[in-house]
Length: 185
Length: 444
Image (cartoon, rainbow over all chains, first blue to last red; front, side, top):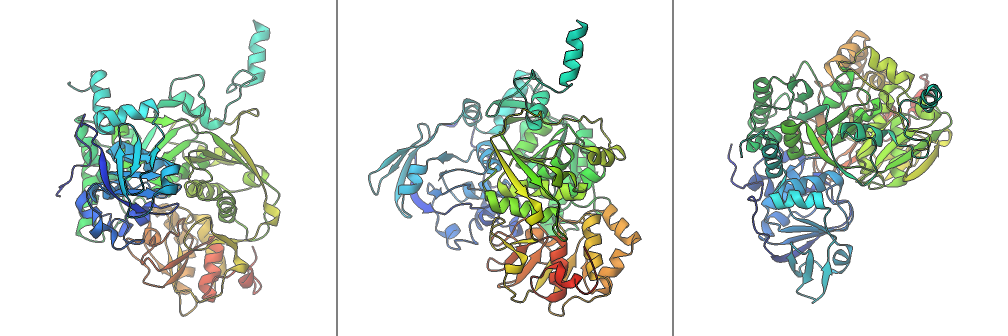
């Protein structure tokens, strides 16, 4: 099986600002819509990305550019636990998902695999589809370059920041096992 | 000292000091985090008793597990893999995924359910006594919350969480607050556990339970069979909840005693436990409900759903395909024929359910009625395999999700309902109440 796109961000990678076009979606975007089950016979990010969002926006996968930003309402990523959903979004080149709120399993999955997500209702209310957004992931500052407005996303709890800083849950787990002497450093 | 001991005994074994009660979720999580108590919002590392994954989430979890660099899973007896979604393999790619799961299970000597020996994980694990009261269970499938019916803390996670749990036997968690649901009264004929959970989701919405535990209580819940409780707990995720828990009672213990493969512990909520919110329902005024496209909270009483023709009826999935469900369906289909324009697919949830249905003659009833019986597994529920819906097709399904594209084409429509409503709809070719059939001789 091929695996062309790494799922986890490189350990201790510097957090780069991201800039791109806003793709705006509504409330309760479920993981079946993000990546339908009919494409779950692979775990390959590039393959999954080809079908990302196709049931609600058939043009998305072909048009999305690396660095672009997804903006959505409440409860983004609800439904199935399929990690293929954040993998498909990340594989499509989306640099960050900004929403009012995330479904719990999707939230964990995104943090665990290193897909940046931010909660910021003010940005969600103000940003229009197609606006250019500049997002500083380190500070959570979101700037709408098109309108000149800027917004501050909610900060993460400390234990989640540790997973992000490690480069995802796999790297954090390695560190934990190494600290416990169960894995060579 | 004697007085002190007696007093402690009177307060109960599970009780915290009188002024600070805990919910059953808090108690189970505290015990598995090595703490005397936990509060909602607290971040903890929790020891897990069972880690489960299926043929979609398992291969990805295995791929991530390999990256950690550890050779063995934390405890092979506590690791369960089930081939359920794309099995028997539907194509070469799904065959490769199932092979990854199968080989890893053999290599690590974990528990593994192959086709012909298992079924859907959420039917198999409770039925085989592999999940029991008081445990903490994580599964790479959102419907892992089903096991909460047994009074264990069970929650769905993604594949990387499964990988980390396989390596460490632990998982990070934010202690969720608990919302209490109290169901009063006696269910009218044809109102089932499915109708109760659809009413509940309809009232609180698809994110009404987000980040919380739903605890189902009240005399109407006590009156539900274990099958009914599994149906309700199964759909807690459809309200966005972390878990859906039922207090352990005599029915739970009777169910567990004859099948438990692990020691179990009764952990119920204190009477003075703190709840985020309490909702009350009177089930005596409920009707059979249908969740219309494209949202499980978009509910209507069956009598108010339009009567446009249907194309397919699916009776199965981890929500509703246990023996009690199949008996209800058989009672309605017996001696009748499915509407000529309907394709009706019936899938027993596990090999054991299928065997029991065979013994009771239910499978013959289904065949006589001109339904098709498919092998135990997830079937059409997730639109990736058999029974996929084409453009514009309309289906009634006893499953749990009616999202756009869930069961096939983006323009197909799925109406979620109980097994009784699904059977009546299969007979009449439109969304129908079982009471319409029952008038001709079958009663609730």
